[in-house]
Image (cartoon, rainbow, N blue to C red):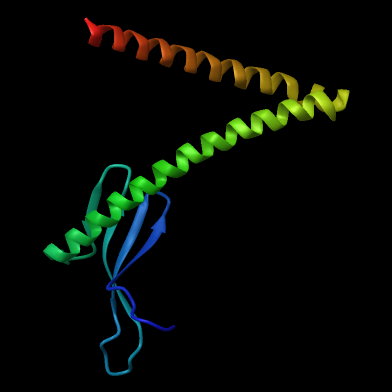
Length: 138
């Protein structure tokens, strides 16, 4: 490894991360990682590891990481939705141009139900937004 290591390392997990303080200032010049906290992004909870108390600097760095991670996950979510639109378009092209009768038989009901469900939710949400806009205009 070259360059200077960060003071903190975040091991990402499904709902957040384990937070480690990185230490290279020891006699053996080894990298040591001391776990200081566990983060839950979903509920914003930060639990110090063991009997540890987090310093103001620890709390600041953790908050900054949580904010950045939440923003990244939100960007990924919307990117996934844009990809889903692309997949729907590719699926339409496949169904129209290349799909066999057997392949269509295999997927048609599942696709129609999923698209109906999605359409129902989208129409309801759009109606809710339009009603809210009308109330705001009054």
